[in-house]
Length: 240
Image (cartoon, rainbow, N blue to C red):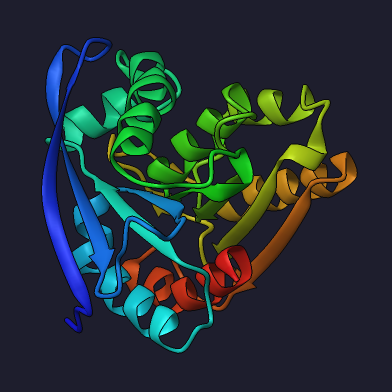
C-alpha cells in the first residue's frame, strides 16, 4: 500500500452507543493545521483500507492534485452482527449510530482539525449496507452531511421513503454506483435480493427530485473487485 502520510488511531467514548469507537484518521504527508480540509468519512473503514485501497488511491489523487485537500476518517463495525445493528435501517443501534456520526464524530473532528464547517465539505462513503446508512445519515442530517458516495447500496423501503420526502435536493450531491450483475445478491442474513432493480428505481427518483447525482452502472457484481476499481472515479467527481 502506498502511504504518503500517516494513519493515527483515535477514540470517541460515545454516549449514544455506550461504547468506545476506534477512529482511524489518514493525515497526508503535507498535513498542516494552517490548511482547511474536507472530510471523507468511510464506513466499513477496514475493508476500504485493505480491500478498497482507499489510502493508496487518495494519496495518488492528492499527489496529482486531482482532488482537494482532505482527511480520511475510517470507522469499522466490531462484527457482522454489530454491522447489521448499526447499518441496517431496522438495526437495534441504527438510530444511535447515525446520531453518533452527526452529533459526536463531527464535533470531535472539528475540535481537532481545521475543516470546512459546511455540509458540502463532508463526504460519507460506504459499500452495500454501509452505503445505506450513509444515505440515511445524509437524509436525517442534511445540514451536516452534504455529499455521499454510495457503492452498491442496499435500498430499503425506508431509504426510498427518505428520498421521497426530500424537499431540499440542492443540499445533497450523490455518487451512486451499482453493478449490472447485482440481480441476485446474497445478504448477510442469508436472503438473496435484486439490488440492481432497487438501485435503478432509487436513481430514477433521485433525478426526479433534482438531486445532483452521478449515476454509474458498471459491468460487474457485488464485490470489492468492482468497488475498488470504481473508487478513483468517485473520489475525483466528489472531491475535485
